[in-house]
Length: 259
Image (spheres, rainbow, N blue to C red):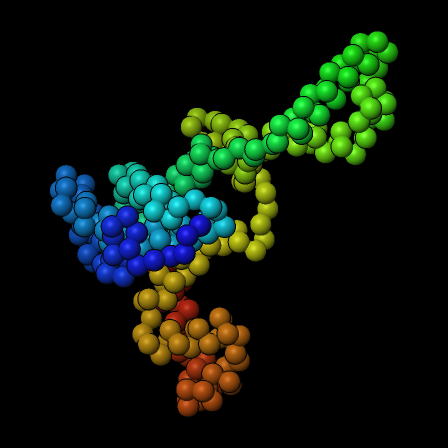
């Protein structure tokens, strides 16, 4: 995937607007009333969310402009389907929608692996020999028997047969029920980069924006850098008791916001 740049699809990402919570609520009220201009503003105000999502797919060789456009489609679908009366953060709802849209795109546009003509010819000879041996002996032939029949070393046979197998994509569907599709990727456990953890990080970041500067700094030192209350107290020149009070107050604010 190409390196990130300031401009994606003609959009200057360094100048994307950041909406305040009050603005989001007011815009969404207007969107529900059919205000097209408010919808456009809300989309632009959440394009940074799309940028954060496509970073998740940085190991793909897809063009970043394409992923950004697909992510925007997911964002728009999220806006059109979001119910702001349920008490769920828009980002928490939108992230899986955007990811799903990009996954479908990658699944539908996955490039097939090209196999050389010589490998295919070897594989087809092996398949023909296998079928003939099975028919004559009424049993499944071994690789050695196929090698003896074709005169091809068994190592080459194994390599050729393996090369023509259709690989399973992480974006291949394995189950569909009422429009909700389960992909191979959904069944692969990733302890290091789980989607649930990633969404939780977004929510925690939103909650930390509710803190004042000192509370925010204390939480970062305590829970992101792993410092003790005593170490924090020494760094910001207050007592440990004050750190403890500020920490408890900050955590209470965050819990109230996330609940």
